[in-house]
Length: 88
Image (cartoon, rainbow, N blue to C red; front, side):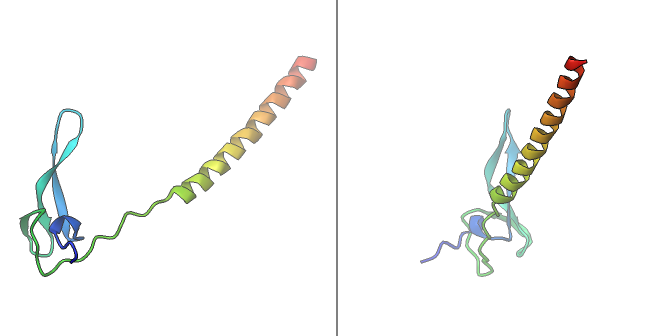
């Protein structure tokens, strides 16, 4: 048996309330298919599984590696330049 609750449907947009330090999930949301407010436990025939969020960790690691390489090269240039001024 599959879980076909609205909270797992791509048409469900949950409502949040603003608390003191963070936003908290509510048990209600907007169904863009039915065009009405529904509870997250509601089950309907238009259910369509929400796709998992993409993880961009490999892209992020690649970009950070490139930035760190550039920073290392800049540091080497600054150190070489400061050594030249010390010799003068």
